Length: 270
Image (cartoon, rainbow, N blue to C red; front, side):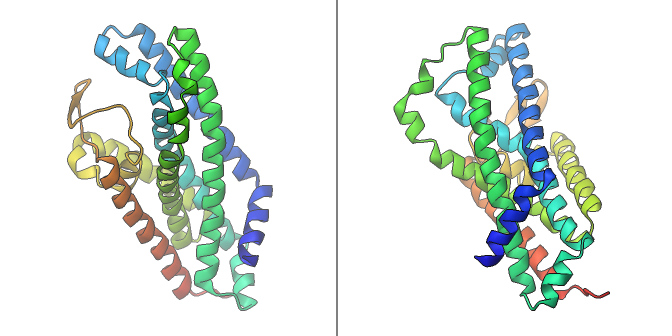
């Protein structure tokens, strides 16, 4: 607990924590704006209906979480990389090990602190996103009476926790990459590059890449109901949320294990 409290205090004062939070708010606002424009201007009635689902409560609660996991995956990976890479670049890891701290415990505790802030950030951005979605619904003429539906509000913790698993896995990707690279910048660039590479590759081989980390994590919360097929001329394939959750947990353990094993065996001198 001592190490965790120390890491949490450090992260609270790090500018990257607040910058990441603001970036996620801004990116989600842009996505929401595109949804509003798409719902109003689309000539395809099916597409328009799908777009308006994002503005219709109570279903918009879970759809907002799904949207944030997808958009936030890249930022979570960059955040994890920024924190893990700084431990090597600034020499704080070396200093802690010199004091006799366990390498694996340092790695796991550091990741836990990053994940706690990532999940708290997700909660804050979710609240902001729901408010913006309600405003967008009013502006678009969509009924928001479902916003106060008690059963939907009581059911929110379950999809939120699943979303946290998706965000934690994305964080673990950046954390592991920056740990192996021993570099903050290399970790951020490689993590973001992996995000876009997987997104692009998924267009050409969706049934393969639906099992890959970012794609699987984006399916842990149920989004708009797409069965495997073609949407807008692009073939899509998504995992069912229960399967996506298991796959995401497997990737989380794998990346976190990689970071811990590398730190345990790395030469830390100088």
